[in-house]
Length: 362
Ligand code: DP6
Image 1: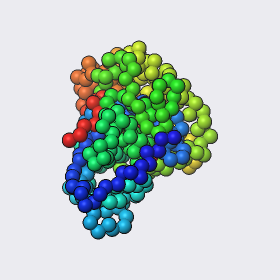
Image 2: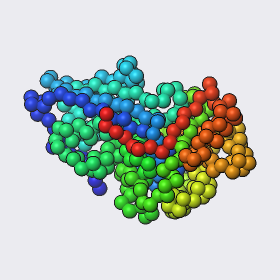
Image 3: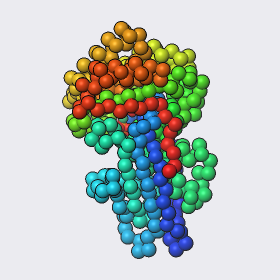
Image 4: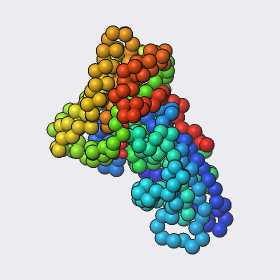
């Protein structure tokens, strides 16, 4: 099993010059959901996602070889230009956990700046964009200091692997458009260790898809994703769920290839509701949807039937509703959002997003 541990990745502190790298990396929306994991951040079932465009994290990482070799990870961390102790502790723990993969992590003094394109309080999961941006920075530094990972696909595969260790869903954010994570016979080369790009004959309509995100509530979630995954271990529906997800990969991939938007929408909506059903059947059970989440779903279904617009919804592990539709319906859908859905959002806020081009080095 590839584990990327590499004792050769150490620098000569006397001759290594300080430097800086930076990446912008987007969030992603799972169409088939990852919910339940084992071992070291390995998924119980395969998942597939749209990479987004406008919801992203920008991270810069400066390095300077230490002269006095202090023990532990030396990190200065700034979020939105301000030092942030809780985030810093998380990053230090993460660097510690991957120090056998990048031994140079212990040799440098690091300064990291991070910012999100979306408001921090928006209730949008930022772990996917944040962890993928950081993983890409580390792989860029490896390329620069050691000359490895010259090949773009090698760099992205390793960045995906590292991002996974930080947050499972983050491993899918390194690729443009669509990415698959988790072994499935439906996708050659798929792996539990890293995501792969999914480009096999996807019908072009899906590349035009929008994902407008209704910010129904910006409160902190009562149960984190990490805890939610853990509760799957005691969920009596868990095994059936994993089987369902494996089968759905085939159905969804076929719909993506055929351009079958109706089947796509049916599966994606069921995935969202199944995710929340799993939360409600956990022990202890919990609910992350809000009354306005359901109100928006009802309005959406009426609009879809009456206006004959192929508008579908998805949910992450939270109350915010993702509205998915082909680009040609943008004007109709955004008019509908303004007329009927904005009032269900906290402070009337929503974010217009769409299928995106993947991370860029900045
Ligand atoms: C509902 O990737 O946030 O968004 O691996 O513990 O960091 P950790 O969990 P995380 O779980 C995301 C779950 C999801 C579905 C998905 O993105 O596939």
